[in-house]
Length: 476
Image 1 (cartoon, rainbow, N blue to C red):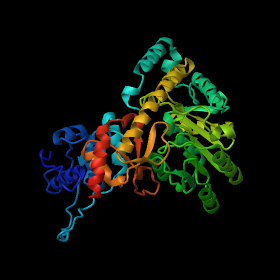
Image 2: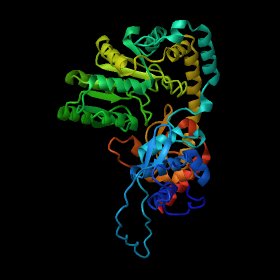
Image 3: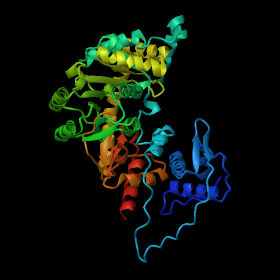
C-alpha cells in the first residue's frame, strides 16, 4: 500500500486524484504486479486517513485508466498493462498565474458507489432515509409475525408470478387512496421500483426508440435507458411540470414511444406536477400514441391528493410504478407495477423469463404492514419529522449563502450554491462530505451550480460551514 502521509490536504489536487496517482505510479513501476489485490475501500480509507468516498473516487479513476479491474464481491485488482510511451513534458504555468489545474470531472459511478459506503451523518447527498429514521421495531415485529403465520406454501414455494395475492389486494386498496382503480390482477410485485422500470423498458421498447425524460432527473434512470439502446430526449422540468413547448417539439421531431417521469415529489427538485400540466401531458399522449411511465417512488412522502397521471388516466395510457424501500428500509426491496390487463400480461411473461417470481416472504411482509396500518402510521411520523428537518435546512442553507431553486418539499431539496458543484464535490469529499452535484441529474452531463440535498442528512451546521469555505476557496 502507498505509505501513509503521502497525501496532502493543502495541495492543489483533490485527495482522490493524489491517491490515484500514487497507486498508478506503483503499478507502472511494477511495484504492484498484475493480479495484485488492492486494499478494500474501508481499509484504504483508514490507512490514509481519508473518507471512503475519496478511495472510491480514486479507484474509479484507476478503473477508467485501465489500471484496475473490479471483480464482483472480491475487490479491485491490478490489470495486465503495457508500458506507456514517454509523454511530452507539460509547460509550467506562466509566472504570476493564479489558476491551478482543474480537478478531473466528477464521475457519477464513483459518487453512486460512494452512497453505498456512506455514513449518513456525513452524506447530504444520500438518496435514502438514514438508518436512525427507520422504524426497526416495526420491521422486526413484522418479520416475527410473518414467521409465526407463514404456512408451508409461503415458506417453500416460488410464489405466484404476479406476486403474493394478499399484497396485491392490499395494494389495490392502497391505490384507491390516491384515486387509481386497479384490480389485484392488474398489479405485479417487483424487486423494488427499479426492477419494475426495467421490465417496462424491455417489454415496450426496442433499441433505438426515443424516450422523453425529465431534465433534471435521476442518473440511474438515464444510464438504464441508455444501456438498453434508447435515445434520450430531455424535457426541462419546471416547478409545475414539464416544458410543454419543448415536449411538443420533441414529439413532432422524434416520435418518441414513451415518457418516463416522476410526477409527485420529483427527484431531485421536490416539485409536484400541477393539474394543468397533467392534462396537457395526457392530451399529447392521446394525440401521439405515447405511453407514460409514472414513477411514484416517493408516494408515501406525499399527500394522497397530489395530482397523478395514472389517477387522471386510470391506466389507459399510463403505467404506474412505486415501491417501499425508500420509506421502510433499503433492505426491503419490494416494489410494484400497476397497468392495464393487456400490458400486465406482457410484463408478467417477461418477469417469469427474467426472474420467475419475487420473494413471497418479502411480499407478505409488506402486505402485513399495509393491512394493519403500520406503514401508514410510520409514513405519517416520517412526514412530520421531515417538516422540521426542511425548516432547519432552509435556515442553514440561506445562512451559508445558498438558495433553493424549487420550493422545499418531500425528502430532497434542489439548492443553488453559487459555484460549480462538480468542482466542489472532490473538495467536499476530501473533507469527508458526500454531496450530489447537479451534473448527476443532467441527461447531457451539464455542470452547474445546483446540488441535491437530503433534508434528513443535511442538518449539521458543520456541513454548511464546510461548503461555504470550499465555495470561497474555489472562487479564489
